[in-house]
View 1: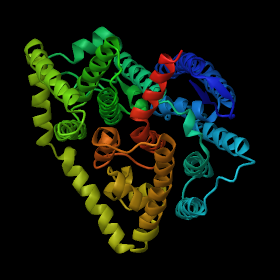
View 2: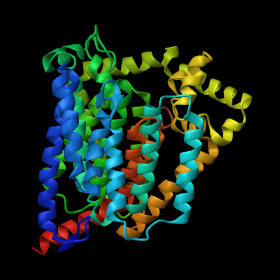
View 3: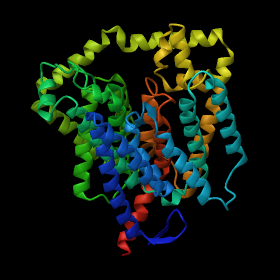
View 4: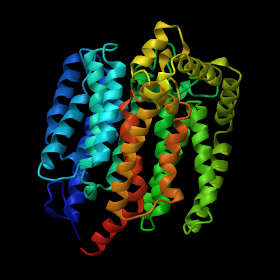
Length: 468
């Protein structure tokens, strides 16, 4: 079996896989260095690391740059030089490379160009003059990357296994870095004991864990965990050629995701897990019913065993969930945020159409002492407050063009199981996420492609091995 690389050259598939594995190892080392940089105050090390990352990124092909970004986005708030986010330089490099590689091809569609120009201008008008040129440049570069990647990326080179592995390695490093921010593994174990000194994994305890906030903290880890579980479940159920060792690893990582997700005492995470469970039940009636039934049985048995082994800890965390329900800072504050958002929209009805700027609307909330000063805590309301309904339509239009390209490239149809990770992300968006974060854009791109790649790419890969 053969495949085409980003330059259009024919490469044996086994060599391509070997190259991807080397890149995965190197990227894992970079993610680990980024994690370490959050725990150290060595300015020379961190600045040197960021410069080295930018130089290295220059030499990657666009699809490998995207894999890198998949694992990088939890560290987006880490990569700063003089308090300025510099990850937008990576996006600029990708844009220039995509344009250069496709310079002789007529691949631009007029509808995509209209969506891009409209969204770009709506955002620029909303934020220009209200925020710094640096912040505006970051947001506009992110919009441009979405457009050029959706139009010009070589999806024939996309391997879902490589994307998922980048995500898994990044997840491991985020969790380990967060644990180490509490002093040590032993200190963390003591904090999460039955006495529950650590109320939510990712929050600070007596000044410990402050660094974890840079990686998302108690809001980011539930998202990372829910996505990990849903992607691995989707991959496992959609493919019939997974070796027993890999099956064990998938089950292990799924339960690690459940553990650390629950430790954050996040109701958004619980909502995502309910979504996963309901979709598994619905999928029992599809052609994958045997694997899904087996997965449900494994989940049931191992859950009982885990409860028997750690009943005190589990009961204490269940009590923490119940405690959150009685606190006004839970959904109570979110309801006040939503109320202030709609009230401000009613007072400024043009905002329904064009929004107030991705960064500017939070600033407006702060200036007027409104609850959305820390953003909307709802992706869909955030889109309306940021770029309005018209901007939201452009946003959806660009993603829909990517969806059509992915569907045509992999020649496959969406299924309940292949859609599950994207649905979990969108469900999480009911209570969190914002267009200000790079992770929102990159994760949606990855999950849309994965809907059509989840079964197809593995079939090609296994066919390549069998034909060697």
